[in-house]
Length: 358
Image (cartoon, rainbow, N blue to C red):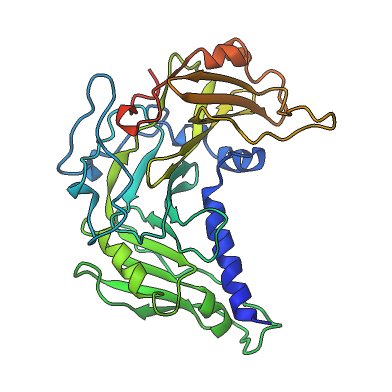
């Protein structure tokens, strides 16, 4: 039995779970348990102009702008500034990203940008369901913060070579774009074999961290270093395919996740909306194509009774009461009343906007 291989495969599966396509009730409760106003601009957290990019373009009056967060799929390492310009944080878009990928290997097929109450992250991975496939998780630490080494568990006592008192170790790495970088590994060699975390100081002086999985031994350092060299940090809004008009004050958007196929063939947006009643609403937006629908005992298509959907411009949006809260839609005049406030912009990201709330 290849114990070490099994550990690596398990780590790869954990990374791929970061790109789950649906906001489940459990994840919504976790994400929403913190202050509900942490995410949506204008809801209690002002953007810091000190971290806006020095060169940017403002969105047009319609809120539409040109930033495409999907990097080129091949060729030399590129930075997003060489493709399209980002929008500064001026709208009401809840999806704010502090980091964007530049170069990625061709095996990466999907990108995901996520923001919730406890932070934000960008992820990149290969074809869903295929293994092994490289996967990357990217995050940036706040300005002025020097991250400490993580606290690690004691490893696996049943594995050969186990050493009690396992702890994280810093190992110098080649510089990234001429700046300080290091790897994080573990004193327990069994755990060290499963870890592949690179930290480096970015051009704006913040620390960034890249977690990689399912890479061959030959690529385990080479590929993360190349990915890191193409990362750009700043403070940007990722355009979304919808606008919500006159969202009642009883509701707050508190988590958002956008998954996009790198070739532009598919996307899925998931939002969690918290209600003043303490209940939550899940919102999904994706292309209006036939779904693979679960069936009930009678063989008929099944979906939660609280789910209601609408379609416009080739895009379908659905709202679902999470936790079966009967009155969560009351402030909007019912589930259909909430859907009537949605404007859907189509499947082309060039038509998406940062004015998500008006």
